[in-house]
Image 1: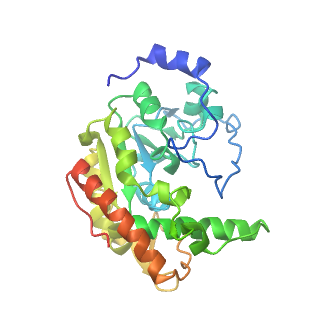
Image 2: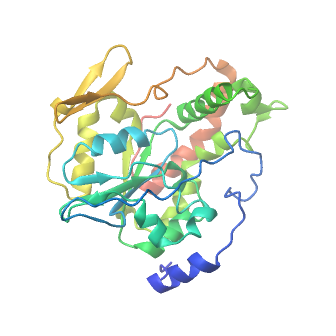
Image 3: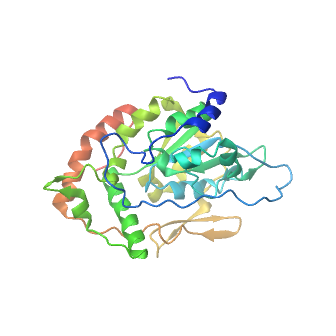
Length: 308
């Protein structure tokens, strides 16, 4: 399907009004992580000489709990990458999309002409509207999609919501009570919906050829980051600048941390939280359900992944 022209894109910004809950048709369960932080435009500042704010050349579109933050921070090591500091949620939240393209661009970092701008919002992958809207902005944009074992992603999704609710003194439920209702898998649970990679990928392939979507293996990125980052460098036509010395394994945290410019840093403490133990029968029920979706996804993207 052809993309909108920029003029039509701007017109849509003014006139489009979609339902506030951007969920797949037929899925209407309340979201456990409802409540969205307000994103305000940054205060005016003097740009570094020779820089400007530009629309992204590449977007990390998801998936939630797939490793999007790790991927962005690892890419940010590259001197020719300028990474947006926050998740913008421009293309998936109507209230932000209605603010217009200039508002969106103003949230991008200042960059030099030789640099590419990258933003990441993991909610884009599962949004029914994001592919069409991004295509209207730039039909040739390069998209990065980082995925992990979809069953493990469900558990990680639950874990994040669980700790967020504890911190906000809200009631929590055992994961088994969310995964199963009346003896059957609860397909209204949004964590499961987000792991139906084939359903969401079909929507993206309506607007972008597969060649414009690079899939990062999130499980491989955790085990050995460098090979996955080198593939991304090639996809984005970046000169090879990320090297093995940019990573070191933190025994305490159990994953790789970053080293660049004389500084060392690890991801936020909220990353890498231990997953709860899940009833084996329930977990197998989830994995069995996801198998056919995984096979369909493999056919769509013409590659396979080592998912259980």
